[in-house]
Length: 388
Image (tube, rainbow, N blue to C red; front, side, top):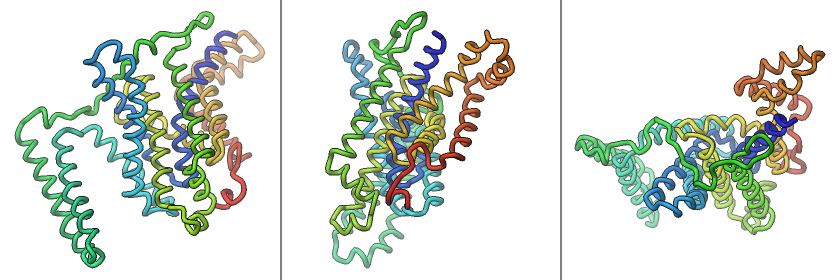
């Protein structure tokens, strides 16, 4: 029985990671109907933000280093939220109602973000800042002129290649200077390690095994995120506006609700939650450019199984998927049933799936079978939402 309890608790912790990762996706996909394949990369940005904050606090020594995680959480939320706003304003808002184009565009953005993390350096940062200064600064200045609509096309034709050329030329000159401080990548393609604070190391004794304190922290963080999202969507003015736009965009616009601002805020909230999920992931292992890809499929499964846009359904689905995956993948279920000779064929089948990858295969098969019975998930949408 003790191995089963251990597996159940570890499964709960895995489910908490999936849930905190799926919260943002449930908002973006569930409330906005946007299939964001760059969600995993937003989690990756949150994980790298944690790594950067950790390095800032390291020279300060104890006891300040023990509290860096409390700075990393809001920092990761802000960084991922800003990235989400840029993604929504620059790409997504032109593709609402076009799921295939949105799918391809966000997939392309995910590739760009992964390569950006591998290659980002001071030279690239300076080049990007120069491009933004000339292009967006010029656009901001000229958009305040009365004849902006007449010169807009001409400005884009002239300013875009000119700003790009200045940025590229600056980057080439800096790279040719052989200044390693400016040209060396910040992260490179190698994974980096995040060191947990001292109070998050070790474990809580539970019988013959110890439950890691870092996983307890992730469970608590997930609960706080759930309560925060629930309060925001149901107890704040902007949450009311988000729910109104979700149910009837046209009527909300007629009533004076700024739908474009609501879209950006919703995407920023979902992206920020992905950043917090990145903080949780960084406590479980090394962080790399492909970190988010390990979770994106599972998080989509959580949202679909739970019911699109349903918070309670996402909670149940995440915990169920986490517990089932760990109990089967760790071999705990096979060890419990091994003493029963009559169950030997079943034990052989269970042991066949007693690896992490094969356990995921079995879980996906179970999910497919479940969706044949309840295609809309555990809690299907009702009312106008079901018609969208």
